[in-house]
Amino acid sequence: MKRHALQVICWLLLASVIGCHRQPPITPAKSPLSVAISTNNIRIGDLIHLQLTSVHPTNLHLNPPDLSHGKEIIVRNRQEFGEKMPDGRVRETVNYTITSLVTGNHVIVTSPGIVWTRPDGTTTQAPFPFVAFKVQSMLTSTNADLRQLHDIHDLVRWPDRIPRWLLALAFSAIIIGLGAWLLRRYLARARALAEQTLPPPPHEVALAALRALLARGWIEQHQVEVFFIELSTIARRYLEARFALHAPEETTEEFLREAANSGALSPDHQRLVARFLEQSDLVKFARHQPGANDMRAAHAAAERLVRETIPALLTAKTSA
Image (cartoon, rainbow, N blue to C red; front, side):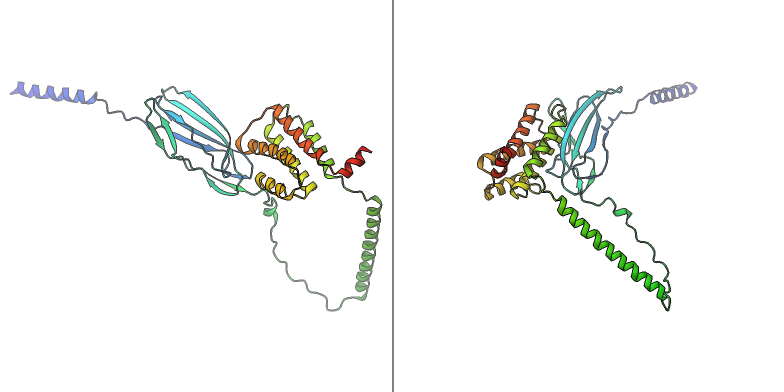
């Protein structure tokens, strides 16, 4: 009997030892996914820096989603980085530089979301984290928060009878002030007539602006975007002043259509304008990166347009 009890105790001890050394099943950890945004409140054309980070096993590869959505969300730049972590996993980081040309609240939505690819071609998906930002108009007053209403002061009792000397003083002040205003207006008008000069013609303003643009050195520094924005602005302002075309407010397609219907520009000049305006749109909206020779060619095309559309009367006077 004692021997049987001793065997039972030994079996119980052995079972407890085995139970203490049994490892629980290991469940694979989910891949952490995070999104960071530099700001969520901008004005039209300002830049936002967005960083997408994914930590996952080595058998997965992150496919960077496309965040573009018309003019509401424009991707200016995208950079990808990857590094191996001490625990054997991989951290993949995608840095986006985005902007928007449409006012209002925008939510970044990708379809089908975020996708990871395995070597065998199978994929894993996850929804893109919620990211939203607000775009304000450039015309919003920056001093709106400074205009505040003040409390109304107590009523001041007006005297029952105004002294005569006060009335005489007020009347004299009005007469003196009126005389001074009339004299100043007369002198200002005489000075304006004596110094009156006609404003410079549109072609002189445009050529001076083109020379100043070339002197900034943006071609040598390869500042493509700011160069083409300034170049298209100079050309549009010149065309509006020279031919009364509403170029600065219209898109390139609308402006070219108006120029063709108005007959203000010859077909050759219309094609010349279309080339560098469309090139400017590609730079601004499609991240096109022309070289220095293309930038000089666009500048030369704008200068040629200005010089070839100078009115014949002004050209004759300049030659004389």
